[in-house]
Length: 202
Image 1 (cartoon, one colour):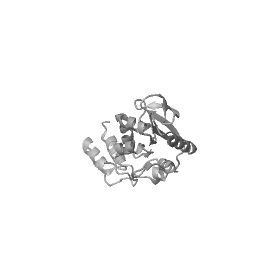
Image 2 (cartoon, one colour):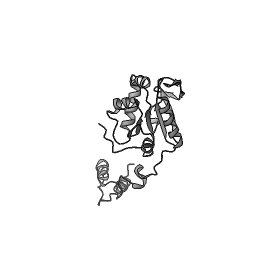
Image 3 (tube, rainbow, N blue to C red):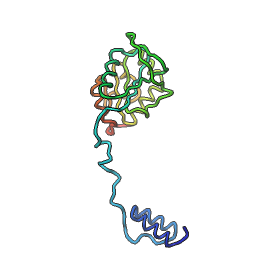
Image 4 (cartoon, rainbow, N blue to C red):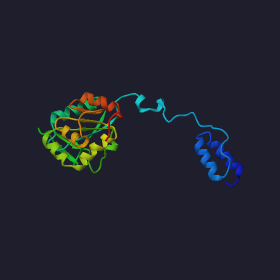
């Protein structure tokens, strides 16, 4: 594009988008800067496109449930029932694939491990309770990182019983926007919000 006329036309077109950018282009190609400011009146924000203004529902969201052997049976079964009723898909993420056994013998199948799943693939995280379970998860750096990443991405995180210990280890707190302890219904509401932008991230 060696024609000065064409170069001038390109600068004039850019002036409709950003006058300062057009000036820099004009200087770089050796043509006249735009004669007047044609900056667009458009803004960087659109209420119509904002996640804050979308319909809030937990249905179709995906929750990563962190659990290992020794999880609190009744506690987790109740949580999974609430998730199902809300139309949420829950995957159990554990240190290894296969069946994991609860404190009272309940068996659940791990869908993925910390090597094959990542928090970015899920809308929210739920940490199961149970003393043996949480001691195992706390010993897994990948489990802590899983929760920490979800926290830094403003996602809802729920924790039951001893699960609060891992949440505290990863996020430094069990309180704050989108962090829910021992309350499945409130957790589902937090999942419906999708992201919690008012959370303070250090």
